[in-house]
Amino acid sequence: MITVKQLLCMKYICYLLVTVLLTGNNLSAQIYTAIKAGGGFATLKPKYENNFPGRVVWYGGLLVHIETQSQFFFQPELLYSLRGYRLNAGAFGNTYSTNISYGYLSMPLLAGYKPAKNVSILVGPEPGYLLSAKSHPDNNTSVYARNVNNRFSVDATAGAALSITPELAIEARVVIGMTGLYRVTYVDNNGSQIETTNTGRNRVLQVGITYRVN
Image (cartoon, rainbow, N blue to C red; front, side, top):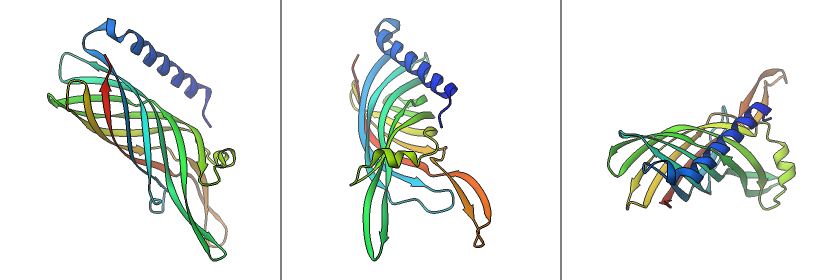
């Protein structure tokens, strides 16, 4: 459950990002905005079991690139991304496979370094909030979302970008979830409780493009 403090923090970060977006042209030639979009591959990692089968996902959003006088820069972003995994299940001799979808609004707060003129390395936290959770093909959003215990999450993000032109760049990232979506109680063979813990952390590989708009 997201707290009031966490919600206010996300609110203020959104205000800051929008303010920079609206005033970036007037602040400095070292600040620019860009739009971005891409696809990827996502899965979910339980605490003790192997990853669930992965599925194809996508993302899109905008960023503010703030350079310093050196090779370092700061890059806050606002993204909407689809995450999830593929569920293979069966009952009464029948098997089926379905996609589980998580819709996230997230704000990567990335520190960057340029080892070369056209190459950037980025790393930082990515706080986010789960807006929707559903399964296909039934799309029973409300029922499925109720099973998620932790909608607010903090991920670790790392990646690299290569500038093709002054306006266009390609990027690749890995997003590692640090917060489990579900709270699960494990029991032994006798039914005695062993542990109650958070489990189900997002794992995402993203590949996409960014386009500088000013």
